[in-house]
Length: 313
Image 1: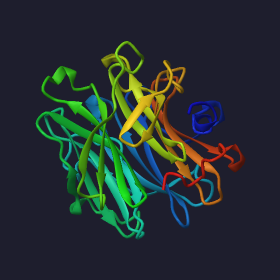
Image 2: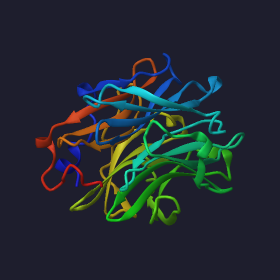
Image 3: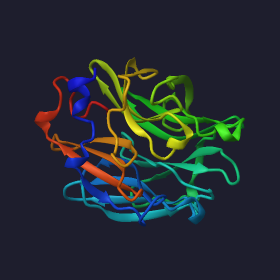
């Protein structure tokens, strides 16, 4: 399933443009972790802003809109870590339900711990999310932190792939696997086990985090962030995995499929556009160590045969 089925979705940074610059220069300043949805009138994008550890970590999630090309965005609202009562915010997940409601799933760090949880905001419009209405939907537990969910509604079922971290040994909490869950409503989730695990001895032996999923006629195609060591935390590279269904994914190949020459390329997101094109968004490490949010567009004729533009819906 590697070749034509994936090449159209793999980043080519030399063809990309900067959608959101980092909030500062140098290591630790990030704009990224994108989650995008094509609405009726615009492309809507949720992303995380981060400063260095000593200056606040992930301090805000922004919801923005692009009414023209999906590459230039105007912010609609900003949700801060103080509003969410969290030590840090990580990747948001923006979703539109079949009924037209909007949901924003937020990954929140529990104060003074390595624990993560996921909270949900709902609204009629993507500019109307209210942090005061947040409710926990993925609490994790004493042994596991849960964050960075990828959520897809497909064939009447809500599917979720989340990054899960072990907490019993704090020094090992950077390790991660991707677990899979299902739900009838996107609110109450039933865990189905580990969908993608690490591979000892390979570039993804320390952690794997699914970032985007496509349902195709051949099965399920996934893109994921991987790292080989704790030192590569924050600078993961992008890999490809595939499987006959959403609960069992196998990494494809022995090397990363996309990276930055300066470090990481991670949090790939794939958005089918109403005109048949496809946009991809990702977080990319630039030469000074800062991370910026980049985007590329794929023309309809570039899509592989048998994979419709809306195959993840």
